[in-house]
Length: 117
Length: 112
Image (tube, rainbow over all chains, first blue to last red; front, side, top):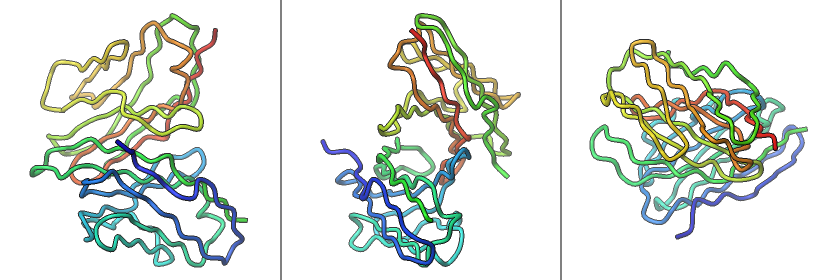
């Protein structure tokens, strides 16, 4: 079974440019999460999709970040325009549908390392 | 605020020895899950072990075990008989309601 995949693995862009990160979850997983780790700091939650709907986007830093999950399959995270502080590793994770407040294991992708110069 | 603190940015251990990574968290929730994730160099993050807060018994997975102290909000990871393949970043994580909270990570190096 294929795991969570992310593209690209690395991206180097200049301040002010636009970058789009993609995440393909494990097939059949309704839950999709985006996280970000800025160098040396904790991994922070960005948002959570249940199928195509945004369940929780409380972690999105500002309106330069736009996440979509059309059709409830893969998701994209666009940063426009990118700023220096956006540099970090962006992780995606997916899990099966949970029952109530139960937890289903989140499977992580390898991450996309974004460098904004 | 619900936070996770890993106070050891880096640790090292000799192969075959035992090492303990510390983690504390802060929450007002009573029901939650705790996890340790491992991210080997240039590889994906994988789940090492998980603990449900309502269970008093500490979780174990082969050489990995936890010391869960709910009152103290402490969740340490013990790795016994350390192997070279255990070299990785280790993240403590906490799942109170709908999203995961992570610590800053501990970089563990197992030395031959």
